[in-house]
Length: 543
Image 1 (cartoon, rainbow, N blue to C red):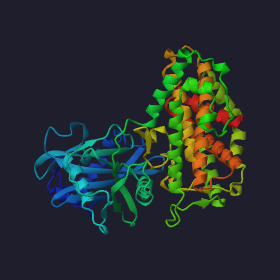
Image 2: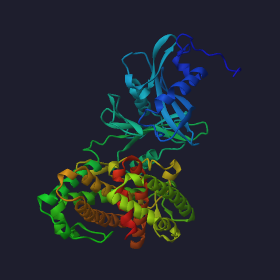
Image 3: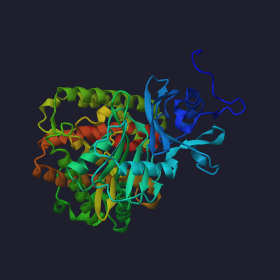
Image 4: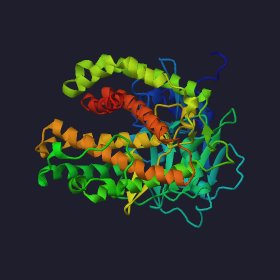
């Protein structure tokens, strides 16, 4: 300790630093006070902080850099949060110094005096001046930016100037800013020593493939760390004016459909069923089902299947950029997948065993079945030679569900290509069977059906068991029609997703994987809903 210079802190006001703001981050005493005394309390309260279920040990400053335009200076901090469980996460926090007493009262990090001027250090995203600087730096980006903090832009981001900026709703893991009511800049809060998949996928689909049903890529902000690795800090896309996401849209449709059971005097036990995974055209859906659910919802599912296929066709038709070229199933992929799934499966088994006391009725029955059949499920994950598969693996969305799809003018726009939140950044970039995305959407259909039943039970006259039966019949027609449309589109574009039995195997495998993944979340967050993934698991293992 003796080699360090004496503290530059005034005794009467412990947070008075006699250095200009532009040099504050070079001041060791400030950094020490900031990291040890202040940030831990601040960061654990932020909704973008993903370490709430772990015990924070200490925070280190991994990197800092200036975000500036002429004399206007802000700092971007990359914080390494270390946990007692021996792992760490990195977070991005931009900071600003403000002197106005009325400003950012809810988001102050530290009261401080800098050269006798009292004020507060705040999260800079709250400051319009900061948001404007980032916008203008992207707008004026040069084609080959060789500086450490790099601003990039597409040819679509031209001929405009800063007008306004505002926060976009209540996001969990990132912070998005709407500029000029025309574009969205997403600041990634949890960051990785690599390019974010959202940046890579968005730019590839928009610039290289001109895929129209995703918001166009406009620009980004990146830094190169000490190891010269590119880190994505922020991503700018066009704003798609929309009527909400497909999850809310589907909940409204399903509430209408379930209300029709009474309104149209539908006899659930007389409704015709369809074979599981049988591909259907819209004309093959029986009149009784159309009469009950209406034609509109099936037209929408067809449109969604078409857009999903078009996304996969764009992702599967690249032969130059190796990070996007299709790949075969091989031994390396098999080992990676099995290790990952066995670890996850064991984790979920423990969660079920530890939470049985929270379950009752059908959920308890299905949880017991899950535990009884655990060896069978484990075998399904392990006892298969993936190298026999003839289809191809592609870069996929990776976290595809109704909440990642916007509804606009009777059409759908796909957003948020970051991948599965629980996965490492490397795992999110592994090429997967595109049917994994399809399975994710099918699980989302299943969830929407059950969520509608749970949220509106007092509105429906039927028993819960009858509603579940009706829901399962409807679900089979949803996925049958989706597959009927999707497979035709994919095959017409010569994307190889395997022959019929292979496709059904991949779908079952991916549905089982997804439902097991969901089970952990439900047991921890809302045990009453654990019945949804448990029913999904039961459907697969009993057919």
